[in-house]
Length: 145
Image 1 (cartoon, rainbow, N blue to C red):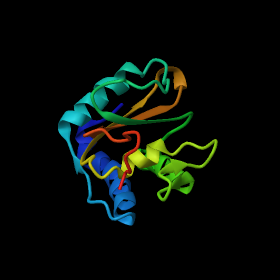
Image 2: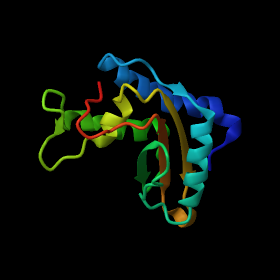
Image 3: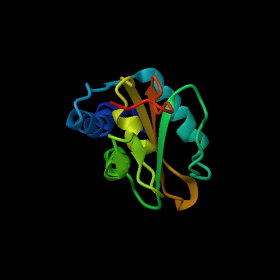
Image 4: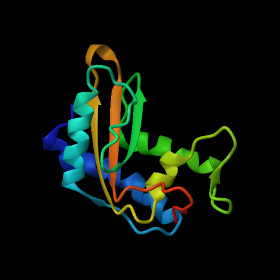
């Protein structure tokens, strides 16, 4: 479960890889946002029973990750950022048959706030990580940066 006593360490574990990826493409850093953290915590807790990668369909942009074992926030962000290999900025598209929307949300220029949460799911079902973004990104026809 997300430990509030470890909030500062957790926030840096999440924020650092986001901002590293953003700096690589010339996008300003994101700021940690407690409203988004609280939203992410509530949603993560709702997934603790099944660990399903089901989006909240809430008011924020969102990336989800799951692992059958332990998964740090930074590892989750690295999974999303790895999709950069499939994103073509010239055509503003993903390689055929590939996913890159998690990456484009991480580097979306107008998304300037992030908040994340992590839970260990019941019955050894793994670890669920969510990051919420404001304003949301990934608008069709718009470039992330």
